[in-house]
Length: 115
Image (cartoon, rainbow, N blue to C red):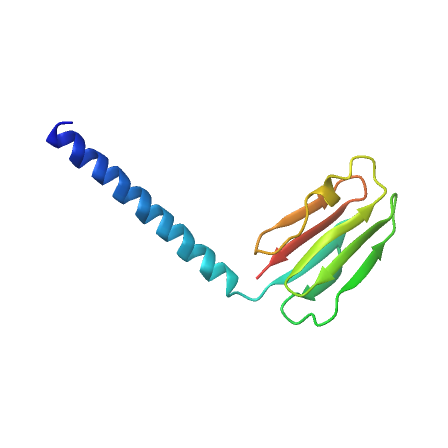
């Protein structure tokens, strides 16, 4: 390896490490923000939940063209079950971070975490 190759490789590794460090710093800042879960159906807010202050887990039942159950726990929320055809909303899993989102298009329900 020539000297210039070594300098180029070292520069690339340094840039990669700086990008990784910046990403981890950004993620840690996101975790300290106040998380609010917003549940909307047919473009109307059904409920706003402060995920940081939830003490007991609970379930929210939504009606419409299909029936859905949303599970809320401290710091996280998810579609627990749905009788819509594709169940993509259920397969999305837990939402924990700001700007995480799960959508059930057939029932027009959106669950999003805001700060």
